[in-house]
Length: 315
Image (cartoon, rainbow, N blue to C red; front, top):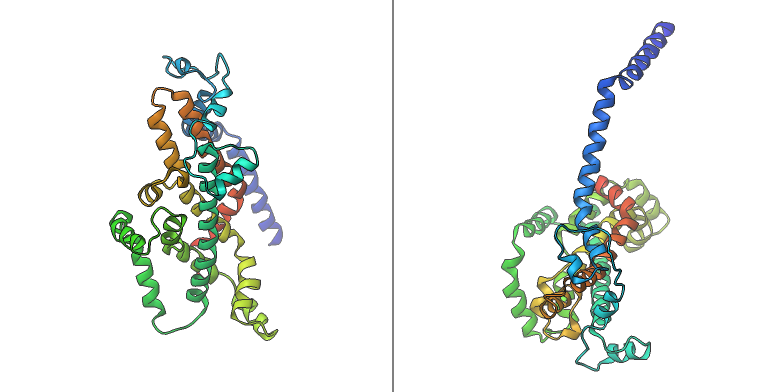
């Protein structure tokens, strides 16, 4: 009986190998990878053209038909963008940039603002969302399911509908034209809470029970047991929130009035108005905004895929 089962297994393996070496299988693989390569070229094409266009002259960028490789490399486009506009204020950050040799250009200030706002946003989201998610996933309290449902229901409210009420509140507490006007309204989000809640539910409760036997309290269990195991989900949330904050244009545009406080997204819009005809400079400026987000995603891509896989798992 065992010999017969082994023979059937071997014959099935041979049949599968024969099928994979057949002409139909080869044609299917060629078509599959051909489509993947075509989709990659379509998705990466605009970025590649913009990257090489940032080193071209205006005439080369606007030439028809377009060319990929610059005939005359113009690396000075980046230095021209870096020193395009000067800061109007003289606060601590401007004085610090002067002290380290960056001068009074607005562009490094915009870059700093984007990094600062994105970093604060990610830290607050990870901390507050993970706390709320741990409560929903592990604690039992009256009305938990109702609160969780209402929290998820807020995802159905269009963000545009909240702009005016949010502005009135920020204006009443005198935070308009400050970093806090952008940071506080987005300090926590329902999407992040839901993502981490689903991941926390997939973690075995035995680990928490063992920690409780050792005398660990709720916060100790949360910080020393749950969070280290939730690194893939935390990395996924960090990537999503970083990209969302880094590319945010609407909120800084509404809440910030002084160019010294603009992030790169709003600063690039102002730069575009001043250099409408110099497309090569606009492309060079856009690279400062595009490349950091790509590098962050590439660095955390493994955790991003792993965390997305676990996000829908419910223990």
